[in-house]
Image (cartoon, rainbow, N blue to C red; front, side):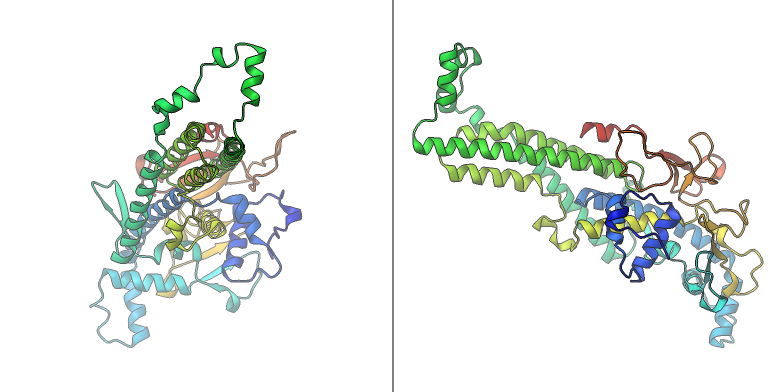
Length: 450
């Protein structure tokens, strides 16, 4: 029914249509003995409040563009929708009292009831799936509204808007805590510490005797315990930060070409890097002024707490009720939806529709969504995230295979190297959709910095 993602097949590579079918089966709880979480882990990065905001903002952008097109389509199809409402409710008023929001509700109802033909299912007409989830994902929620001269985008309804405002406010508080919470320790300027513990290298290692004396000078038993505890926690903390940096490099590589808002990604990366560098630099100096082993433990835990404030597992973010697996599922489902969501809604409109139930004509082929109208009618529809054959030739046919080079890892889940990504259906020159070409093997400064 769809590709299985068991642990023995983690090197398998997928097309966007394959990921869509896995996500669809996962959403319908039809996974049987399959393990889609293994695939979601390969596609999406681990969760943090910065990446959560980046994903939410990008979702709002697509919602804003698609609902603008949806409102125009509802206005054009108002006569069909009004006639359908009259025939359904036996209303003799002729639907003259319907307003624009009502037309949009009727059009959305028509989309939920539309039959979706999928070549992979080979079902009869009566057994076809109702509703096209990639469009409903962005059209069913409330509209998005911009504030502050278009710089801030939020949901139009008050409840969702307050939730987004709270998330961003908490994010800024966490960022400030990470930026100023690990300032230079006071022991940098502590005269007692400088006098008794800080010595220049020329004096500390002037001779073999002084070097051996320095290495074996542990002091009393209590001082020795403090010294060993400090050394142990320094090694452990440096290993934690090293592992964290490697993990963030993998996360940055995943978000390099997936639908995430770059502002929040950059803000999150800067705050995490700043926190990591200062934590490693401040830890040895902070330990110099500690005279008790328990203070070494408290200092380490305090540093680690500030270091992990932005993780979804942090108690400060428990109100989101999300963990890494949930976030990776949400991010992967959005990738799957955008892979089958048209740049222009009109591509799925039946030009010969005579009734409201015939407005939508949705078909999915072996390679993805098929356009019902427009210049690509009968061919593969141009979606908001789609594979292309090469960087110089933006054709959706025959996606370029991504072969693993000798000596490199085979961790990428994608069968294609190049992707086209689009948000605005009229953002390009001449009123055409604005398209950005993304290369999943392209050099990334964000990955290099980690």
